[in-house]
Amino acid sequence: MSSALVGRLIRLSAVRNGRSSPLSTSDVSGRGVTPNRPAVTTSTGAILPRPKQTRFGLVRIALVVLPFLYVGTQISKNFAALLEEHDIFVPEDDDDDD
Image (cartoon, rainbow, N blue to C red):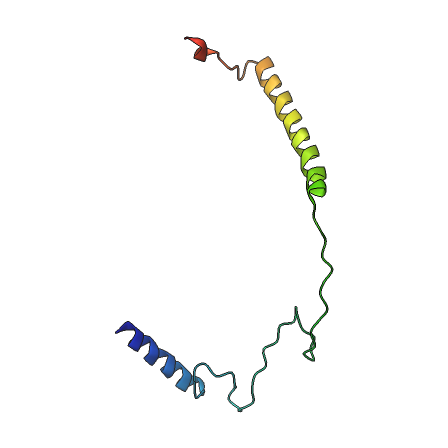
């Protein structure tokens, strides 16, 4: 029942827009509409050459991640020492009651 209703709505919208079929690619004047993808084609329709691809190896990823991971670890360690020094946060050893 709902598929019949959807079909009627599609046909009604096609009639209102002046198209003979809702799936046709022609506009009102009867000319065919050519899809245009500017990232892949030129304005004349020619296919552009493949873009240069930058390869990301594990070495490059490690060269970026490891220094920032080390700096973050040092900042966290120094901030934890500062909190303990000013008695703002002192970890308690309550887990050793066994």
